[in-house]
Length: 222
Length: 123
Image 1 (cartoon, rainbow over the protein chains, first blue to last red):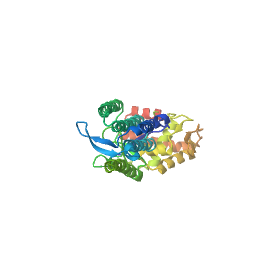
Image 2 (image 1 turned 90 degrees about the vertical axis):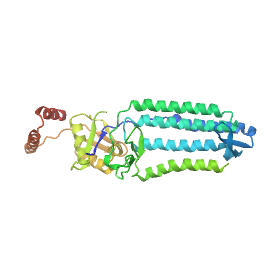
Image 3 (image 1 turned 90 degrees about the horizontal axis):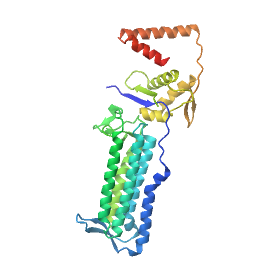
Image 4 (image 1 turned 120 degrees about the horizontal axis):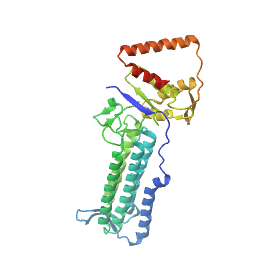
C-alpha cells in the first residue's frame, strides 16, 4: 500500500478561540472559591468528600484551606490540562475540517470539568444536601456533551489514515520524522498523540500522572 | 480552498521535488492566483507529516524560479511572475520531452481524452 499524503496548499486562518471563552472555566472555579470563602465560618469541622451509593458521606477531610479547596484544585488541574491540549491541537495537529470542532468539544469538556468541580465543592460544604442535584446536573451535562459531540462527529468527512506504517498495535502512532504532535485517530474521530515526539510523550505522561497525583492527594488528605 | 498537494512517499522521487512540482503546476494553471498566501513551511510540513526542511527546500526552489516571495514568519506569497521567453532550442527540448511522455502514456493505454484534459488543466 502506497503512503500517499495530501494537504491544502493555501494558508487558512487558525481557529479563533476567544480569550473570554478560554477564561470561562477558570472563572467558574474562581467563583467556587469565592463561594467557599463566603461560607467558611459556617463550615463544619469535617467536610465530606465521598459518599456511598445511598448518598451518606463515608469519607471526610478536616476543614482546612487545602482540604476545602480540593475539588477546586482537582478541577483546576483538569482544566489546565485541557487548555494545554487545546493549545497542542491548535499548534501541533494537521489542518483539517476536524480541528475546529474537536477544539470546541475539548473546551466544552473543560467547562463540564469546572462545573462538576464546583458541584462537588457545593455538595461538600453543604454536608451533602446538594449531592443529588449536583449528580443529576452532572449527568445531564455529560449527556448534553455526548449529544453535542455526536452531532459534530456526524457532519465530519472521513479522514484518510495517516502514514499507515507508523501505527503500533493498530492504534498507537509513532513516527519520529512526523513533526505533528497530534494526528487524527486511525479509528473514530479525534486526535491521538504522535509518540515519536518527545513533547507528546511528556504531555501524555502529564495527562496520566497529574490527575492521579491529585486523586492520591485527596485520598491522603483524609 | 481547493488546491492541494499530494505526495507519495513510496515513489522514487524526492519529496521536496514532488512538492515543488505540484505547487508549480497549481501556480502555472492559476488554480492559486498571484497575491495568495501559501501555507507556511511549518503548516505544510505538519499536514504532510514530513520534515520542515523538505518543504523549505521546495519553497526555496520555487522562490528561485520567481514564483514565490518568502518572508520569515509570514510565509510564502505567490508572485505575479512574468513568463520568461525561452530560446528556440529550449522550446524544442521541452517539446521533445512532452512528445516522449505523451507517447509513453499512449503506449500504457491512457485515453487521448484523459491526456487532453490533463494538458488543458495545466494550460
